[in-house]
Amino acid sequence: MTTIWCYVFILPAMILAGLFTFYPIVASWFISFLEWSGITADGEFVGLDNYREAVSDPFFWRAFGRSFLFTSIDVPIRLFLALVVAIILNDAALRMRSIFRTIFFLPVVTTMAVVGVVWSLLLSPFDGPVNIALLETGLVGTPIDFLGSVDTALISVVAVHIWKSFGITMIYWLVALQTVPAGLYEAARMDGAGRWRMHRDITMPLIKPFAILIALISVVSTLQVFGLVQAMTQGRPNYSTELVELYVYRLAFAPEGAVEPRMGYASAVAVIFGVAVMVIALGQGWALRRARSLRAAARTETGGEDQ
Image 1 (cartoon, one colour):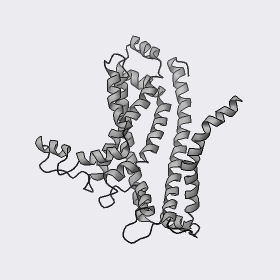
Image 2 (cartoon, one colour):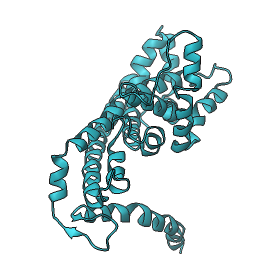
Image 3 (cartoon, one colour):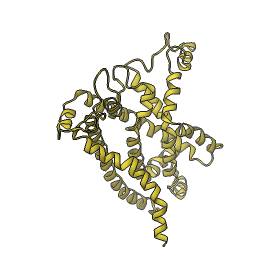
Image 4 (cartoon, helix red, strand yellow):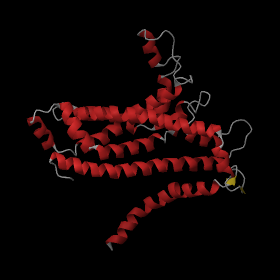
């Protein structure tokens, strides 16, 4: 009887997941084999033609490259800065550390769209507070069009995303740091080890599996920034911030000029990108299993018990 009630309680969540997650995924696979605008009742089956077109489409590969460029800039910077802050806030001797944690985490609870709109106003070249501050301090002579220049638009969006997601990455690191036994640090201090050496020889080897998991979560989440980029730049200027998600959206729902939506081709692009993300996730999953075995060996060498 208890088992039946367990299924009853998870049924609403499974129904919602089926309607809004699993069904759209399977439907996109089917639609990717059609030449269909999404407006007419039926589409024409074209087999792998959409996939062949995607592979030879330079606009797709540019958007694909921008997505991974965005990730390759965002993730390492955010992981490093969040780790440094987490190590500082993990110190029990630091006063008001709970308040600092809350301050860093606040942007996480704000929606991507709201963050995008607010930062678009802050970075405005006309009356944006950021440009006003730069002009008044003499750091620049003329306003910087952060979101209107090909040279600065993408990096500006990356910076905003780092600010937005910094708090959750910091929390992940804090959880990882709190799994390291305090006794190891005490023993290292008695042996005369300094703070840097303790973090190098104790902290980093023991949190390596968590580091891989945090990196995996960060990479996957950074590849899903449609709301932020759409709110800030809509892929402009000159497509310099058009990531794969925006490219798919433009093809499927917002075609330019008199061109009809191409739901089938957009679905094929989405499937290719999804497979690429899945390959990354599988690779990092293998690295996580490898890191767990290394962590067990490291704990044995440092005298700790594997948990």
